[in-house]
Image (cartoon, rainbow, N blue to C red; front, side):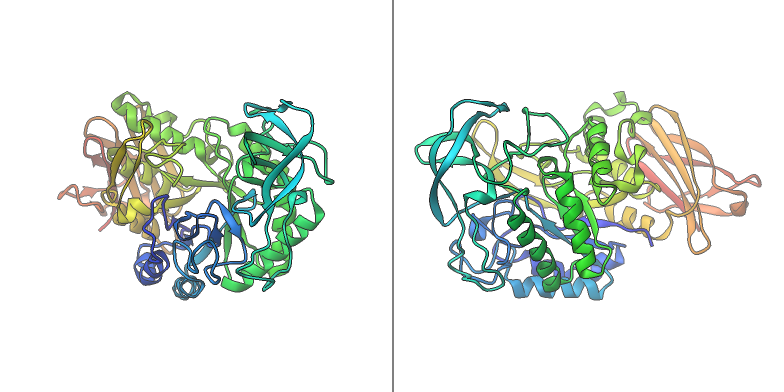
Length: 489
């Protein structure tokens, strides 16, 4: 069966420990739609306690088990709820993808004094001071957990940079015993983009690497995850993750799937360099394709649909591409806000779900809907309504049942794309047409094996059927600004 992932959260997911229970209760529904993997949010205790989305990790060993940061459960629930959700999904044949945040830590327990250099935030290679003593929250002792699961305590030697110094603001490069300067990154953005936020983990420290490698095995043994989503790999050495993944796979005896977040729209070369540097040990999200979807949705009929895959990882290296229409960073009111307009989402999902290249990841609000309020760029409260994508369930089922076999493209029209999947020995095929302008009727060859057969519109736009001629061709219509999926009667 075609693999399909869902990101089962968004930045504003409801708290109060409800997410894990919803995932558990949705296991049968997700299976019926052909979802084969669920990507959960970071499951460990964050500096924000019960309000933390999870990307401010405090204690990696606290999965909602200890009274820390003002709460036992995380925003999403307790460890027991997490385990129940994972078990329910896996019993339904759905893999669990764990979100791994190893770039930084937040919410230190105690301050330490150490030497650091203040750097220019826009060029971290440019020092703004000589080495001087600062005081920052770099000591992590985890008093709520004690030494259960691990007795490792973090101190300033474990970090390469911080964004807090008592009485000062800025970015401070820590002077320690495990390498001079920042660790080398793939890209030269901001001089060196090793530092992102909070206390940046120094992955050249062998004691840190040993702890993170041991933790990966421990985490797997807790929930038996099948894959990992790696946060902020743009700011971490590919050599670190190559080693970490190799040991994780070796220690668990499983071929753990891995996808990294290297968000660089329009910079395909950087994604390819990262994949090469990790020797293909992970996939990456196709940020360029998401950007193309966003642009196309704003441009309407003025966008040339034939270019939608230009400059994308899906075109250049489909084996290592995970495709998204939106995610928690691109949704409205986020820093990387680049949402796809609602009218275009069915087209985008068809391009993701019904073609042979890429591993598609559905976004939670697109399947379940979402409502939330946050501050806009002017500081005013703004209420956001994210509606369920029209026909999303039918598109998912079409992927599950029909999107197989030889693909034949009909990309000759700037405003109307079409392709066919001929099917295979186990599945019938389909014909897909999408338009960002007028209604069309696209002649396409579905295959002589379908000669004389009738096809109907799986999405329900048309009452009429299409009859395939003796040469295996049919004329497949599509409504204006929409998508149709034609399957055998």
